Length: 220
Image (cartoon, rainbow, N blue to C red):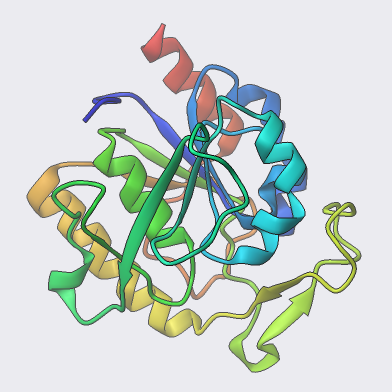
């Protein structure tokens, strides 16, 4: 609860991130996922895939204040001075598995996408509300993955890919998580991504700029 009561923002790597003024995040606690480091320097950087870690190796080594979050069995190319948290993950298996772990050494829920464990992490740190941006769920599972070339994430390596989602399954999982947050924690999750898949309608949506301005006034 080191960030208790402070707003937190989780940045996914969907292309809608390019439509947002990320300078508005200055002063907020943030967690970037996977390829977002090409666009933004967050408080926490999470990658449960070794590919982005390897690609951003030099940048992460230089960014001493950015805390790294990786899977517990991943090898990282950094020395002991690098702030690095190791995240144990478990598959989704009903409502009981969306509960927050008691501390960061316990298991986080990993339903084949990195957004939920990142959001759980920010709530575990005490953040409230937590804002989602760049988390669109717009890549259909039928495509399995798409190359990031052609988006504004132009400096990712050639052939870098983003996995598709079973949106119906993610809808069920996040619906359980929202019920858990409201019923047991009295915490708030808001989606400020501008282009969310219409099938993923379980998290309340608010406009990014207005929401950040309101939170900044309240914080100040």
